[in-house]
Picture (tube, protein in one colour):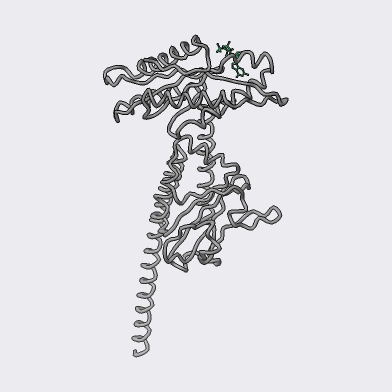
Length: 372
Ligand SMILES: Nc1nc2c(ncn2[C@@H]2O[C@H](COP(=O)(O)OP(=O)(O)OP(=O)(O)O)[C@@H](O)[C@H]2O)c(=O)[nH]1
């Protein structure tokens, strides 16, 4: 009797222990389910990002929350700074992304790349001195990190770097399936948006000179006029045409003519502010939009451009020196009437600058005429 009572108590205790274990497993499963749902929502967000800025912004905003991390940085391999340059030209504000890091080659990412090895995630204790490339501004108390290679077709395109104040969060003994999965989704999204942005950029620029094309300038002009109206600042436009350019082609050939076009574009650009926009309108014609510049200051910039082209001869492919000059027409937007359609105002501004250019040509070339 006594013995039976004891075994019943044991059974009850065992039963209770099992229930507790089950409850804890259920809690864990629920927790895991919640984490999985959050990660699925994160995956959907990044897959849906249409631009580089949106993708990178989403990663930095959501990943620390979704994965409970104290640091997230993203390193991108950017040989020749192509990605940086194009994104910058498309208006990405890099100051908003201090944790976006660019490396000019794969060696800067810190993976073992000996003899064709596929780099693997590194889950290790944090060390400020040796991991500066991934965490240049680590938060205080960072204790463990995961550096996850971003691979596309076995090519290393970057690294996703995750950090935690919990020393046990990332250790070499942990499995890497989960971070590898995250890395592969991020790598695909990055490659997609970067190639889309590159295509967009190619569609907006002139292949020969690298400055904007007419399609972009037409659109930008409308945007700038509407902004200038809202914020009440001056907007000026320059129409620039190379003088006697036909003779350059006829004398030195079309390829030498192309070189002259590139060099003229570069000299114009060197005189402009970052906020100004330079576009090739066709042939040997360029248009510049000067933001927050009245007729007087735009004419001064135009004189600087004229002088920078005329004062230093161009070196032709076979070493000959060639004097080149440009004529420039300048006009300023003085129509702040909100009820005038912007497209019409834009056309009028360019037409005024073109008219002034015509006068500069008539007046003898190598000169600036401001439209009054
Ligand atoms: N090399 C090169 N030449 C171009 C390109 N696009 C247009 N041209 C040439 O630019 C020249 C323009 O000549 P014109 O319009 O007669 O003008 P111009 O000789 O500069 O004379 P003015 O403007 O009156 O001083 C033509 O010879 C075109 O063939 C180009 O992409 N590359």
